[in-house]
Length: 336
Ligand code: NAD
Ligand code: UDP
Image (cartoon, rainbow, N blue to C red; front, side, top):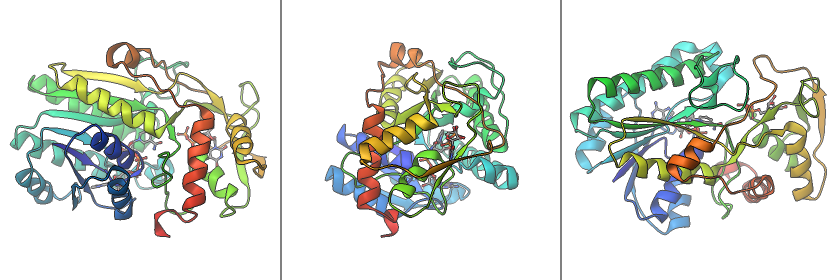
């Protein structure tokens, strides 16, 4: 059985679908701090399969222990964590406590139950702001905000655990920019409040929840002056987790993979493709750069392709079409 922490969240719920479709038994642990149980009902609807859900906080050691005592867990896919960069700058202790403290509790319980195989959600943010794209896994790491530091610290903690006990097998997955939704339109990204990220912002402008997209800077040294990122369809990303899980079934120690497409798209590429698929324009204006943003980055995805047999196949049009289907069917997300 696979324990999915943060399984009610955006990437977690899509990964639950792929795991269930592939025949895995799963159980989900989530404190619902940034998600709704309805997402899990939808996962059950899409797959026609049932699984246990524990509303547990990773800061609650006994709560995690109960999940392990009641289930035969063999693998953990660890998504649970807070992820808003700006909030992490304002509330660093909350981020270190939740992300690092929560992970330490999880790892202690895993050790107790002799479960030593874990896939961890890291992020391209660990490459910092000094390296040129494409980012390759061997680049030096240097996080530039508290959120990124939690990811880097957890990567280091996992590497130290392996160094102390070679029975562990650990995959560190560095995601680029996940977007899109399941093709059923039943699950997708449902941020609380006004979205920080580009794709949910565009999609809320498209359905009239927000008035106008602010494009943060049009004077970057990029093809059209707007920021360039590597957007990966969330279902491709979810499939990447199954490939990583297959990998750590063998004795591999600690492995690190970028999960991206290797293709950079600008903010204007995103807006224009979204408008084209939607069939009407998206209202936008240029505003100042957002502090802390880089001009351009994208993955070198070749290691994951070589060693995991993973290659993202969904196009930018797919990402937009699936986001539109999700947003139009769920104008106010899971809250109805
Ligand atoms: P999300 O917020 O939708 O999902 C995270 C889930 O973890 C939520 O359901 C939340 O309720 C839960 N959670 C948070 N703290 C918890 C705790 N202490 N105990 C139990 N549950 C807790 O985010 P997501 O976009 O699905 O991201 C999943 C993971 O991937 C996160 O670790 C995130 O940092 C990482 N990541 C995300 C992105 C991105 O752009 N979405 C990029 C790189 C890495
Ligand atoms: N962006 C934007 N307007 C928004 C949100 C994002 O112009 O409302 C830009 C941002 O400057 C970056 C790209 O879109 O160039 C992706 O930003 P996002 O926050 O989605 O992801 P990040 O790359 O920061 O993790």
